[in-house]
Length: 264
Length: 266
Image 1 (spheres, rainbow over the protein chains, first blue to last red):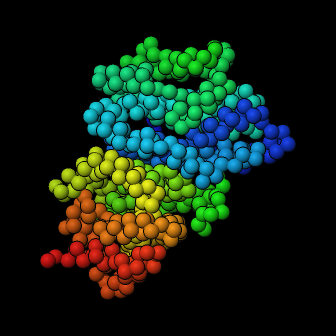
Image 2 (image 1 turned 60 degrees about the vertical axis):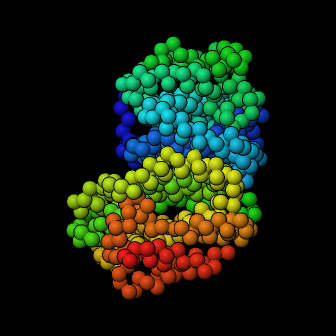
Image 3 (image 1 turned 90 degrees about the vertical axis):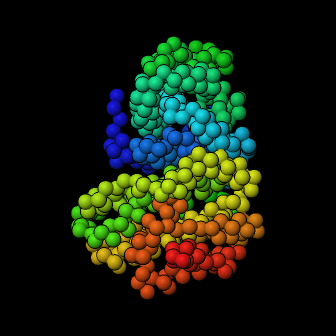
């Protein structure tokens, strides 16, 4: 699978929702469990800039292609946040700069020192660290795309479904970038494969784990991925991951659901 | 996202909705050729500065600035605009037979780059987070200054070479909005933070001309000479210092004059 960075940057655009009939939510609101999931997704999207920060202190950004991707990716994810904030706003849930700031500040020193640990690790490990970033990004984008598609199905709301599918389509492009990068970097390096396997099997947690409470993570995972239909999506992600060089037999996403007691 | 009433006046929500996308296709880049070598060197210099988008983002985001969601929303769109601006400058360079490629840094510059990429982000993450939110005020003032100097560069470029009038005319509105944001944010933060004013004075006192840190003073000197040897440039350079010094607590600072003074060989 090749990834055409020029085409990606040329076509990169902010997700739109002006043409969608979302005003209906004022009279016919979403149920509380879906709003809770949307709020989580919104926070994760706005938090992208902090993931970007952690990547920028590693050798990951040295190549022009990665540079170009990150600029567009960061903007697209920000607009996913804006789109979800709009939907939340129609339900009377206001997402303000001050509130987001308060959340980031609350993350405390563990978050503030992340650039230090990331930078130190990448200096020790060297170039192979980039492979770990790329596979990590791929799993997260796969999960995000699956989450949006699941919520679209679960809610079955015509306007919301279109918006969520638009967001999922952009996430799918991000997957293509990360997976292409990961495959290329893992292929040639047994060390990169060992590192990536070690990192994924020991440290991977569902997207948003670092910023939301454990209860919120479990709520969102159960809401979206419990039951056979949800588990099918999760297994599909694990299958994608396992196809990457050196990742055979991994089932990190399903494992994380099992660990949270979310039944298939 | 909604802004709280306590925040300064620049409308970030409107800005992020309406970026200026200066794509290469929006400009007749072929019409810029042929440029005199000294003018092309200026364009190459500007390209090199503008494309350092992610370096600058990194330096800001490892500090408490990353928590400032209003600032990060601005930076998000700023980076997008900068990306296309750099692509357009690269296209101008190519149309003039140049090759947009990294300048080889001076030996000292190479060491600095290694240090800045490997060590500084870690030091800054610790140091600036200990200083806390006050550091944002200083960074916004620095952002304003660097942008103001670049903006004057584009203004001068059009005066030096009529072929670059269109380029200059399309870049300057983009810079004008960046300047408005930085000025607005810096003014509000400096006004309420004595520690921010102290930090800003310290940061700005050591301000260096863009690119000097890596390329070395000798490599940047010809660019500065081309742009500013004309006597009518001097009052505009002074005007930048004056506008900066008008920000709360920055009275008497003259970082542009000081940085220029360092180019004068002793």
